[in-house]
Length: 315
Image (tube, rainbow, N blue to C red):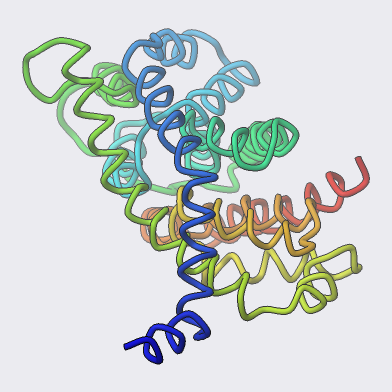
C-alpha cells in the first residue's frame, strides 16, 4: 500500500492534480465574483437605454452605442444567431449589427471582472479597449461600404409587420429579462446559476488543462514560442482559432502560460481572435450574409487582434 502511495505521489498525475488544485484555490473566487457582479450588471443595469440610443442616434454615434451594447450584453454566442438573422431580415442597419456582433463575443461584464482578478486591470482594460476599437471599426467599415452599395441586396427583408416595430422588439431582446415571473432578483439568481453552470464547467476543465501545461510544457518552450519573439502574437492568434472554447475556460490557461513567460501582447491576441472566430459567430456571418461580408469580418477580427496585440506589447 505504501509503495502504491509513493508511486502515486511520484507520478505525473499527482503533480498535475496538485498544480490544478492549487490553481483552483488561487482563482476560484475571481470567477465567483465575476459571476455575481456580471449577473448584477446584466439584470439591473438599464441596457435598454443603450438600445434606445442605437435607435435614436444616427451614423457614428449609433455604431458606437451598438458596440457598447455588445460589450455589456450577457448573451451567449449561440443566442446571437437567431437575433442576428431576425435583425437582418427586419431592416436594422448592417453597420449596427456588425458592430454588435463583433463586440459581443469579445467581452462581457463577467469576463472583464474575472480578467481583472486573474490577470490584472491592465489586461482587463486592454480587452475592453480592443473590443470597442474592433467593434466600432467593423461597424464603421460596413457603414461606409454599405453607402457605396458594396453590400447591395445582402439580405431580403421578410414581409409582415413594419420594420420599425420589429426593430424595437429585437433590440429590446439584447438585454437580459426574466423568462418567468418573480422579478429582477429571481432573474439575477437564475442568471447566476446559468453562468456558474456553463462557464464554471469550462473553468474546471481549463484548470486541469492548465495543470497539465504547467507540468509538462517547459518554461523555455513557452518563452521561445509565446514570449517576446517577433512571431509570438501571430502564433497566439493562430492557436486561438482552433483551441478557444469558452471565455471562462481560456483564462486559467492563459494565466498559466503567462506565468511560464507568455507575452501580454500574445495573450491579448489570443483573447481577441479566439472568441471572434468561434463556431457561432463565424457560422452566423457565413450563412446569413454574402462571402465578401464574411471575409471582411474575419479579416478585421483576426488582423485587428494581431495589430492590437503588437500595440499592447509596446505599452
